[in-house]
Image 1 (cartoon, rainbow, N blue to C red):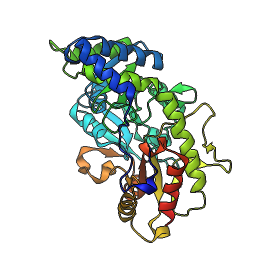
Image 2: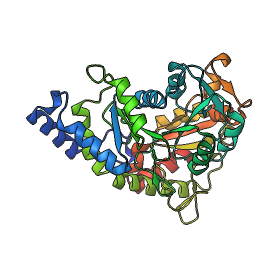
Image 3: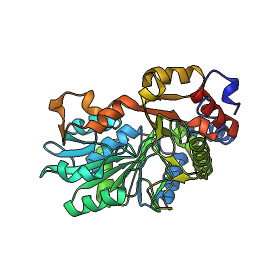
Image 4: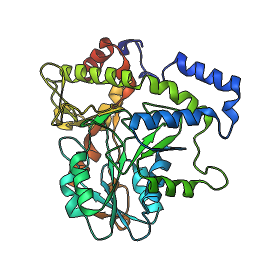
Length: 372
């Protein structure tokens, strides 16, 4: 990867990958690229099942579709409520509406930017059927507390690990704290097939209900054999690349430790190692690296700063829009005024991941661009 200082565009994704090219050539040579039930999807499902140590993997056409299917698998429907963070991917909110349930929005933690599990009890009602827990921008939801709350009240958990495949949370792989976990293989994701997704679960009933919903003479939500073919070699390098991204995050946060006005979801210790209020068995994933941006400290708006960074070849962009600010009040219930999610809507910046597979010089170029 060339250094950012030598280019005006952020690094492209996906990377050129000889193993992916070889997989494409094999799929062409053996004809599996055009089959309904070839070997590639079977291999991908088997590999994902082994990685997650689970009995069931359902491959899907997208991560968004996977969340919808998870809701079906949990029998969430009309009259039910589903709790999720007010700062989350819009597709999760719309999927809850699609199955006839009502989203219940809770605020985010001001340190990590993730769903604040301390608000779950206030959000719970007799109609609460499930919680969607999304790990976003290098932060992680407090899943042990989430799991304890859900088990106490008989509420299901959908763990959205679309931004952090292969990450671990207190020794457990992301996705397996939930009753069902969700992965995405979208075009910008760490594992990419342009489109696609998967569900992982140990629950026979959830898997069966999903299959009943999807099998309609054929698979209504399919991942293609060609998509599966290019994902398998990427799985081979996932752990290696996750480790490199983590090392570069440590390097970057150490370089930014004296920069006022950008507070990362993940902080840097003086040694440059990641410092988190989490167990040593936790290793987040870094599809995006999230920052709380202080406009006053920089003397410009968050959006203007992002434009300036883009012009310098740094892929720093505004985060999601908060759900309570983009949807009519009648479409959801909220625990309170959601002040932290409002702040997230206005101030979060995210760094896209390709640069985190670069060199120390690439990381230094980010520091130089922010400081100039």
